[in-house]
Image 1 (cartoon, rainbow, N blue to C red):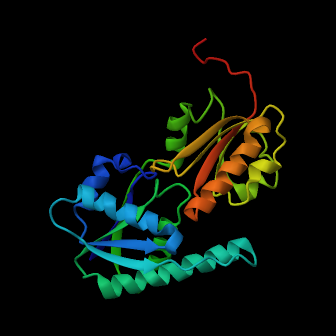
Image 2 (cartoon, one colour):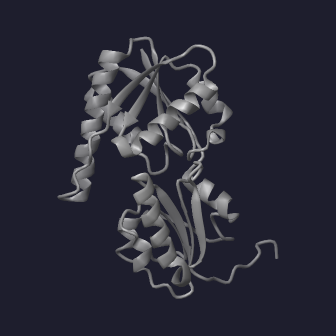
Length: 258
């Protein structure tokens, strides 16, 4: 039976790749490498560089495939479901046409496959369609949130307090109730610009883990416009951007040991 290894490869730094991930890469006969247009060719190349760095013996076959764009019009949940179904069909065809029945396939996922990534949901679609039989396992990776916190030398959570991980689209609808700390991913609309900036701090980073990494931190009222300017300049320079940030409102933090 075919086996799929869903491997988290970190936020962009090859040194984020864990020993477990390296050992998993070495077992793969085939590596599926998605492409998302010329502006994301950097990411496909980085995937190959990571593999070339750590796979030093038996070389796998690289199979590249184009990721279809998600429709931006219409109802959001429906467009995501249709997008996942289209990618699931691509996976099915690749498994049937490019992978032998006893071979192992590697799917390299940025960050961690369990956080804001659709690979596992898409594989569930493939299994439900029952066109091709396979088993799979999952290798955890370092997320962009971890890389962001390390870069700014901050903990993700404050003592005894929750953190909500959300998207820019949801943040634009208002600050989530009952939380003072928000981690925002997938923000293509600069939702931080809509936040009441009274005493809110922001820790922002883009291209985390890569040689292009940039980061800014401070009071949102003071630094928000600079983040927007730096973000626009970086996107114009590279043709794409991936960024994330943490927003915090002031609280009285008490040491739990007291």
